[in-house]
Image 1: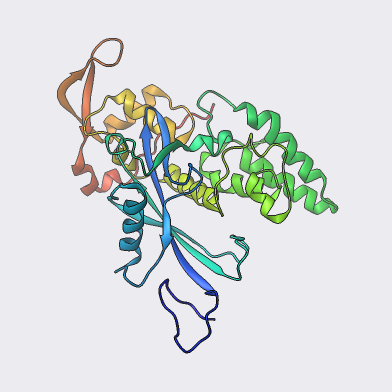
Image 2: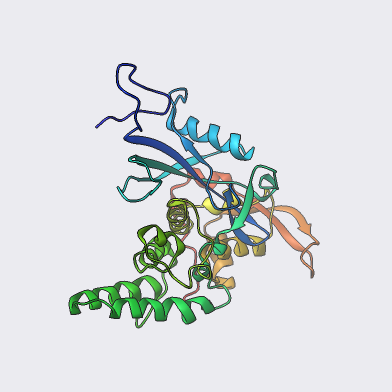
Length: 322
């Protein structure tokens, strides 16, 4: 198999479509006004991305170049998320295999202001069943659950029906299973397999409820976004990554709201504050905020020394299970 980066060609070989192309994709996240937002382009239907080219010094430098060119947003710390290479993941009408290498990045609200080249959209506009801060989403109870159970029941073999029912119950918290916010990717992939999301139409399957089940994205960008959400939701429980999304100073309520926005569920307030204090994740600035609508609230900042302390390896945030 011939694998080439963009911009290369064997002069002696006849021109033909490349068999494999490497693509770089960024999942850039911020918390804007209490909502977890993803950086998008192309009328909010694409993540910033571009092919890996010979002039790129490394995968990371190539990704940074594409994101800044397309959005005007320079990236800070990034980490590799996942590599997608399924044969049928992109159907563009060409005999071409696209391997996408995705990265996760986070930024602070004041750095996420609007720009003509980019847009910030709440990730719950793409995954409306993921936001449980106000209780079980109506779309989950009214559409997702009955349609998934009907899909499971349509299987010809009893063993397949049972397996589908089990997977749906685990992923979406049906029956005796609890909702697990970290299973964002499994939930999206199950809806895709059941033909309920718009992206499944590439396989000739269509859902009358696709428009209700969130904004569709090109290729498998929504799948990649779901992967980023799952990774971040997992990391906020054992690493203080939420502070990468916070302004330099903040109230404890603002910090709690940010964690709840990312997790998509509420946190027990006393337990949350007790945990923050026990692990010494923040320190007082000596100032207060009058923007709370009530009594002035103390302002805090992240205690960066925590990154060098073994005891701070985990935050174990107390996400409410009710």
